Image 1 (spheres, rainbow, N blue to C red):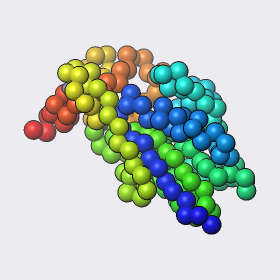
Image 2 (cartoon, rainbow, N blue to C red):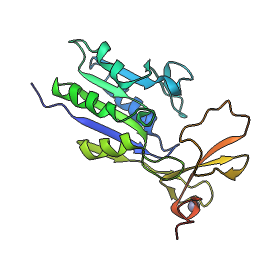
Image 3 (cartoon, rainbow, N blue to C red):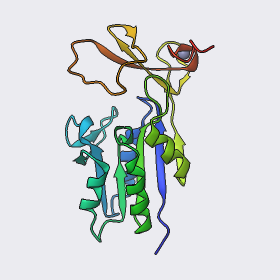
Image 4 (cartoon, rainbow, N blue to C red):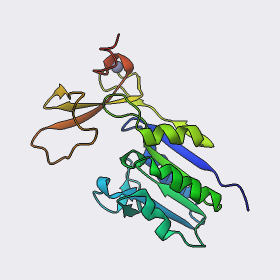
Length: 189
Ligand SMILES: [Zn+2]
């Protein structure tokens, strides 16, 4: 049995992570595959990108649900928005690789406080290939590695939950920013 591989696309919002995931799917269209995404992010069952690419996916609540879909014909598994999962996803990915299934993941590396999502941090360590993507700072236009969250136009408090609902009665905005313009990174200096 061939040694299976893990590839990972990670970076801030708007850095094209899902687009690369879908491009990988479309360029390997003949490979028998399953595509998963967290239900927490479900606007629909498809993964969409700003470039208009889309692909049908299976929505799951917990990473352990992935194994229920695995059958002998599956050669590759794609998982989008890994930052919505807890660290048990690592065990599932290792289990998939141990049975010869290649895995491709994408997701945010850091939250709005510029702190690593534990799951992404672990996967960066074990990935055979990790591609760090950048966006553009929405303030100065330089390369941006970070996502910042603004509530009603002001930087959100560090004490807010990492993931918040769109249903909150507030104007929630995510911006990609460089290190100089991140509300918490510039504060540390
Ligand atoms: Zn900037």
